[in-house]
Length: 313
Image (tube, rainbow, N blue to C red; front, side, top):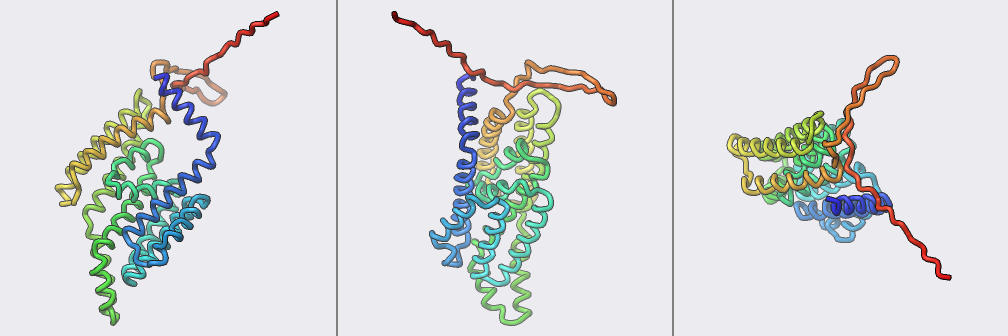
């Protein structure tokens, strides 16, 4: 344990010393991965798919606020889809505007989650998202996870139906044909049971982990990780049958188990406390009595080195 604490303290000191540089590099990598994912899923506008443009956008994202980067990603997505189908671009633009309104209204501080959620979906590991948001976020963090999940499934739908969407757009010569094209796109995006199931599972698991991790009980974070992961698995299994969703049970179990391990690591770095030394303190002022439960964090004291001087005469 002492070795792990020493490693933890060393990492914290490095991060505190180079925080601005580390954040810039992380944002650059995050935006670069997001751009590569968009180009892979869409990539219909060749100019935006240019590697130079991808690097420029990633460099901009390294110093821009993440919320501004999210808006930029939305513009790039709509531009790609416009090259494929006007009707599809209009529908996606409306969905993104609605998502941005909900996101900026309820969870504007969880910008990283909006970008990370689609990336975790691409990696087939979306089950890690509730662990991070439930332990480190707030109940409204489920909004960010939901927005990221919807964005992923919209891109996935467009990629799988690109030929049909392009053909529908080419046939839309009249107003009636155009309305038919809009209906086709909207129906395809709304009638996605897997998307709704994943949004529900991520939201419920995030809220549940947050509530349990804030309970005044010993080892609440470990209980939150275990209970949240179990409920997540049950919801996925039941929903997969009820909604006839296309979810790999094997990957779900693997992802949830990996989420448990990640949660233990998060707890070690963020909530490493010694419940054996819990103290209960009572005091008062002119208006209130206060009953405080104090749990000390586990810390590693720096070793005291004694230097013995030997004077040679």
